[in-house]
Image (cartoon, rainbow, N blue to C red; front, side, top):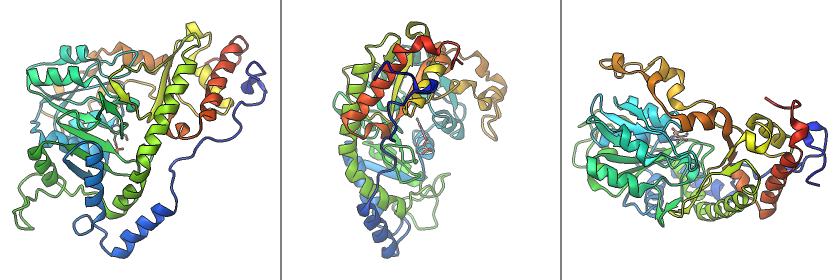
Length: 414
Ligand SMILES: Cc1ncc(COP(=O)(O)O)c(C=O)c1O
């Protein structure tokens, strides 16, 4: 079977059936949504769904506070504002992440400074973070990329020494844990996204988590037009906005949350199994998992393919795997600091006073560049919700492509 003709060359695919589709929903979600609809209380200010979800989600992530907001970009920005970021303050971010991790910094009038990732864990390298610190550094945003927690022991030590605020970008890390402590409770603030692709979703949405009462109070005010608990309704204390999560989203999140623990366990078990199988192949390097990662949420299963060792390029391997029925992609094609927004400093009204001094062409992050350019492969989270047999299919497809790699040369190369 494995060494039969590759599907890309006209053979039968290893996996003719689709994997688990996302989102997973049913009658329970319908009941929750109808409950919110029939309550007639459709906004967070008078409804009960978001409040209930905030409490449950925060508790699940070992936090005293959860503040539901419209998305995971706003949660980062409000976290930075709550931390007291001032115009031109620097915030260290990885170059291998979604646009929002850095755009939120600019929208908080801060300067994103990129520190490279580790080539094997794909997460911020604490040594690179330390090297990027200047007297203007005010905060760090580690991203638990793909759902694998960053080395938070090293980062928090550094942050303490330099008096920096740490905001975890946990958009991929619902239910993940570091040394048995949940993502979102490890820094001063945590930020999660509930956008459609995420491991917990209501289409759009986000939440800020924290155990710091003062930061929580500021975030609450920032997401609610600058109001304070003791103030009058039309009394506004901060530059803020209406960033409140809606009740229909809260209702869906309440029912989806019931599934999160089971789904996270399944993803983690399957992800670990797949990694153990495919790492046997020459040139295949799944995301290295340190012992400190006590639970990986596998928002993405990530691996590096070294084309020379494997005998075919990343682009060729992806095309061949896709033809075998394995949903995968190369992820980000370029590091974040190489996006036109950064090269052209298209920052709208932000950072105008210091724009002349910024030049992102000088940013040097070779690890991120290498994996973007030629090595990374992503498989999305819902693929990991099925039985072990699904993992066997993926691993068999990798083996089939490897065994037939010589036939790919020149054929699908690119
Ligand atoms: C790492 C990361 N941070 C932040 C975000 C922003 O979240 P949202 O789309 O909910 O604004 C996303 C994804 O969407 C993400 O992947």
